[in-house]
Image (tube, rainbow, N blue to C red; front, side):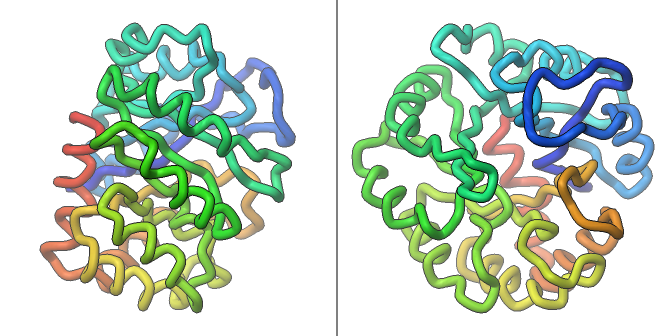
Length: 255
């Protein structure tokens, strides 16, 4: 059984509120039609940047009945009612910190960490190696027990992963094995096999997997889920694969 810890769901007709791209008209039912036959039984819907901090659509999606159990990751502002979002199935907030996208919100981490710790959430960071040292310096001041998840393996260079490993060695940082933003071999991912094997061997309790469906801002050909699962099955031991795909997401998102 599989948990996909990183998907997005967009409206079929409504225009996006903000953002640098036009989202595809792919919603949660399109996702479950594609993923459920592959053994995906749980998924985490991540608030898309085009929706900003208005999580109303995300909350609506989490209330959808279907073959895949859902949790959510929100983007929040100072007025967000965290308990209401928690009751709707949200278990984390997300910080964007990508120079390429013009986002540099890592300064928000200490403030957001104090807020989300009150409802037992973690924080997901869409960040990159240029920020790793700064992130490490911040961690001592974060609430005890707060976990940080690096989207897309922290956009690390697969040939030079030492900065990523140093963060995971703290025990507080997890890596999301979403290959499409890191690999230059989309559809095969041969350049990630050794990295994922090392992560699974060294940090089996700190890895999760996400497809990044429906793959916005990703060059053609559009990635497919089966090759990603094949990569993880071949690179991870059976025990690490089970932890990555089922046990770890259960602990992190409270399925």
